[in-house]
Image 1 (cartoon, one colour):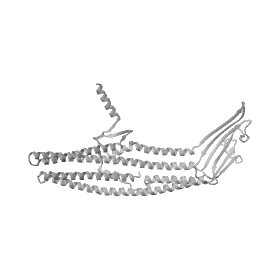
Image 2 (cartoon, helix red, strand yellow; image 1 turned 45 degrees about the vertical axis):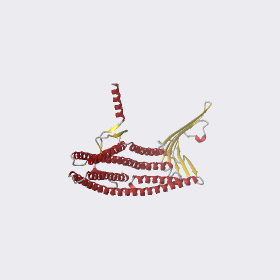
Image 3 (cartoon, one colour; image 1 turned 135 degrees about the horizontal axis):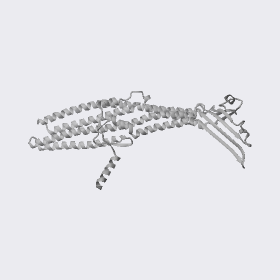
Image 4 (cartoon, rainbow, N blue to C red; image 1 turned 135 degrees about the vertical axis):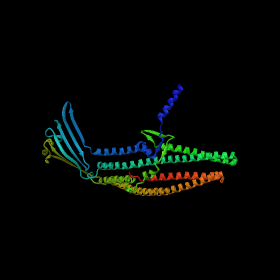
Length: 459
């Protein structure tokens, strides 16, 4: 009883820790659907896209309004010197202008006269303006624009990554499908060899054939069985490889031995029709376009950094609350004005950064042109290869059909006693070789068509 319980527990844990795809048939469309929805690499590609969106949010944070409060007091030997309070609201803008609103309070017998506030409170409205470096291009603005381009770039890279995964997964399914067809072909030939072997043995017993014919028939049969076992091993390996891309939620699936792969032969070519749109719309070219755009923004920033730093500060001052008496608050006779000018004499750092940004931009432009040329040649090669293999498939099918006719004819002649078992086996071997070759060429053609489809994918 204890042994039975342990056996049951072991089987339960084994089943619980290994998911088996037990569906009777698995079509290519269903398989791709599982990959798109559950494969971890597809989810990782989406994570990269979410990361770029988070970086965009971070860049936008540079323009978030800010509220600051500063409070100071000084007391010596229980004697108050002063109390100072300042609250400021800053609103950055993309044009190098920061709008500011402040409120100040100050009191104390030893207060610095510069900090004296007339009345109970002092209000200030104004702005800090960059008149040189930072007016039209500054680090915050450029970073925000680059972050927007980066999101668009990540969207295109997401398409490329997903297409790459789907291409590998589809090729794995086609290998499995071709291995299954090879196994079916050999199963048919094993049945034929077994039937012929039995017939030859009967004819040997009746004296119609020599005993050596029985040995030759047995060799042919065992050869077919051996080939079928080798094909079964390849089929198992191909199923495991296809299982690598098959997931359900976060659990990997293993394709069961009894599961049969299927492809809708009529709809296959229509489902994987390569795109005919211009290369400018290809995700790979778009990614490089966005990189070039980011390079231009970086060069624009470095050019702007050659300008002197000129910062103008202006505040309207009022002891009246501007929300209640805005005309009095905007009296130009009550103001503070500040001007700050700064310029490095040699600008060596700034000129070097501009040079580096220009070199990087040129490098990106050359990379884009080279990528366009490589992609154009690659797609042209895949198209030519796909067309050539389509012709080869038609020829291979015709050759296989002719070998089948020769084999059937030779088999009839053997039945009538007008041929030898050696010729029958020879015809059958050629027929088998042609049938297997046709499947291999068809697999290459479909893989090439799929590569052409995924490499030219624009969606």
